[in-house]
Length: 407
Image (cartoon, rainbow, N blue to C red):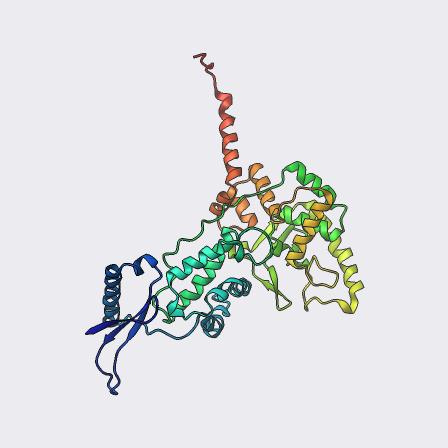
């Protein structure tokens, strides 16, 4: 089996294998283009020739073993639009609709501008390395804010690129994923910020000065350790006033095409029944039987809630608040009242921290928050468990009977 190497461009060569003729008389000469980005290698004639000879030998082996995939002329963007999105990403069994929205944002903002015009088989590992270097520059930030993209965002973008190229490999458009071998940005350290008890007391006092719907919503987020998507998805029928509990079985993460995306919670373990303080449930019952019904009556024909839906916290027209709107309200509330700003999600962290410090087991707190197991909880709240361990050790100080040495 003869092979040849032919220079095609400034830094590209065509490898060709001669297999004779097809049954129909056509020449059977599979070819493959090799592009070299290593400038040092391009300057060394002997090493360059050796490298190309090695690539030709590998190519021959691929052809003989049947693992060679004939290059497609499909560009990255064509693959995304004609194959990946309609045949893979749009299937909710593969990607949740909310995840696809995020993926599409990263594709449109960063990935398509960099790779969209390239043929799939032309994308090399060094192209991905260069793309990662670009993501670390201020130029990659498209929101107008100063600085560079965080490591977490960089990782999310690379995750989308790898996903698309993994499907291209699986469907045999390319032989291997050029993302393989790329060193990813380090995972960002998760810094858990929480309010201490005096701060929570002051915040609650200020919340009582707000409209009933808001202090119930925010206070419920803290008392139940709920995610914001969980609290806005609550319906009256989720509240068991006899048992003083709230059922979490739905989540509203966002809107898609102006419609609320109502879905199951984040994970299977997130479906749970959370016991709440009796006094809070009394307040919630009074709100749902009086003020909520009055709002429903006042809205009249302007009531927009879907048939059978009774969202507990709504905008006056039966439709739930968007999670982002709740976040904005929280930020403005803190600023107006002069409180230290930490994210709304911090109320969930504050709730868990408080319960751990009161001596509840990690398992009990994990189940309350909807974590799959204690491991996730303990890794997230390691700052709390460490201080608890130190306090536990100090409890044994009372058993010291021998006087301290003067030495």
